Length: 94
View 1: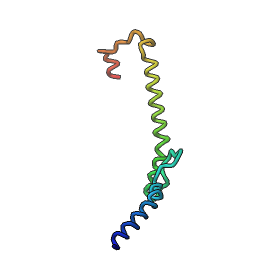
View 2 (view 1 turned 60 degrees about the vertical axis):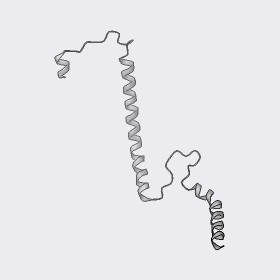
View 3 (view 1 turned 180 degrees about the vertical axis):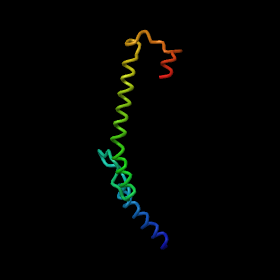
View 4 (view 1 turned 90 degrees about the vertical axis):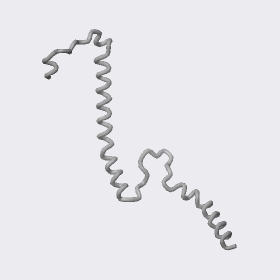
């Protein structure tokens, strides 16, 4: 009898507490950053992320610009007769 009562109370408590537990760590509307850190380690991870993110963006934009430049500069319409660089000792040494 006590076990059944305990189980029903525990089940009711879990049912009513489930929405509250579901909100812990849940994403927020329009959220685009990390969640609020709970530990010092996560604060340091977020600080490291915020340090690296601009560097990664600059490198990515630079690589994209180089790729676009190569595609425009060396396509077949801009360069209909490609140069022959095979067996050129000076070019191979440089």
